[in-house]
Length: 198
Image (cartoon, rainbow, N blue to C red; front, side, top):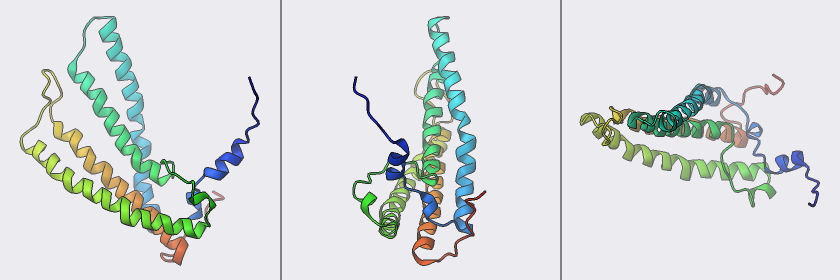
């Protein structure tokens, strides 16, 4: 088998977006703090989900039984964890990007692309989702929607309302990034002192 000399630090440097290049502001810190709070504490969902999956497997293969409500709860917890993690990824700049072109551009040009991408594509997309999700959730609440499966979970509107909450958090994360990019490009809003030494 051939050996490859791979410099992981160099690769990471080449693809890193370095959100820290964009200065922090008071408002961006507030919005990112809200997203950070829900991102950190919702990460426990994955532990609960793992235990639930193991429990369901044991029920099925050891005791020969299963509960529809527990299987549905797995799907719901996965959806909640995934949707809440999206805004956390935006704040930490860990979301998927294609940087074939951008990696050769200056930080100022990258910031302009970021500004245009957020304001012309991402925020309108989030608004579009919220516009169509609201009646979807409202209707589920009004009719007291429950699972169609016998023995399934009640209050289906609860899981559907996570769509509204998750996209609200994504909007906060996107606005925080937009503010940081504006601060980088124009100096407004005024950047906070660099606390990278913390």
